[in-house]
Image (spheres, rainbow, N blue to C red):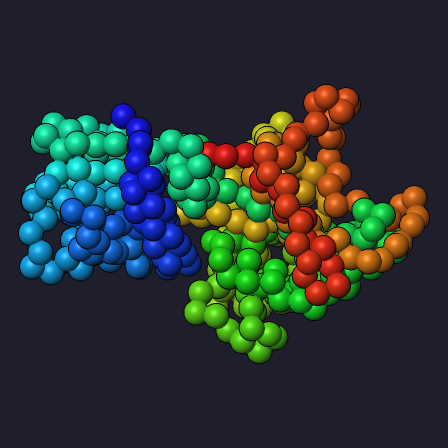
Amino acid sequence: MTITTETDRLHLARAIELAERGAGSVRPNPLVGAVIVRDDEVLGEGWHERYGGHHAEVNAIEACGEADLNGATLFVSLEPCCHDGKTPPCTQAIIDAGIGRVVVASDDPTEKASGRGLGILRDEGIDVLVADGELAVRARLLNQPFRKHARVGRPWILFKSAMTLDGKVATRAGDSQWISSEESRLLAHEWRASVDAVIVGIGTALADDPQLTARPEGVFAEPARQPRRVVFDSLARLPIGSQLLAAADQVPLTVVVSRAAARVDTDALEAAGAQVLVATGENEPARVRSALDQLGADGITCALLEGGPHLAGAFLDAGEIDEIRLFLAPLLLGGRTARDPLEGEGVERISEALRALTFECDRVGEDLLISARLREW
């Protein structure tokens, strides 16, 4: 059964809005918001505020205080959990509260849930409705990293790059600093702070000797949470004296190598504080998927891919780019050998091209930010 009234839609939209307040505080858990209503009066609201804390449904129930919830309606952005984890199952809290109706915006695709929670509620005589249309899409988009990780075990990948008007990310000599504006670079630091990991290739690591830390308020700011730094380095060439290894005891560093890497070099990386993962497979796209499987198993649910072009092309060929954000700067480079943002094998025909599901454009400083969502999980 789906939603039919405008009142239901308004309350469910409010639950989705509340869910967004948990952004950055609940991973690897999903963002969830909840609203409890009876006789058109909102009795309580809540959202999942922090990992390990009460879920949205329990926070909403507690916000109702001494109000009688018998027959009330719970609007929730995600299917209530039905298993014991860091907290008891929300389905039992809903049943114990006497709530008579539950309106859900999206399913929970995890093996422990996937419709089980809704079935338990129905078995207890609770009327359960599931949204469709725009609200369902909004709720699913809110938790794309959670949904992808639950379904395939790999992190959701956001590819970020900065390019010129002629589509170049570096000159023929390899110079790329800086194509984008300062405002764009600060925004990119905010994106770093919002993900579990930042990924680059060994070419970028050798050329730039980056820190890959998140500094969203400026160069000297240190946010409370730093993403894991990940370098795809098939032959273990990352210098022991690099900035990445120098900070490995403070900010986790993972180096992804292939079986071709020399043992003496991988041992040196581990001795310097890096985690070393060996990616297997017959080609680069296969090794990308192998690495992402291992990162996903290690708890990485979302990552920012910052390139360079060779690695980005391998991710595209592997089908592992879920969203793209490109800064388009008012510059022209020219040059046959200037670098493009994506290399790899690509496709042979336009008809084989991956078409974006959404396409948006915004102004950031002197740049245009082009955003495209490629997949929905």
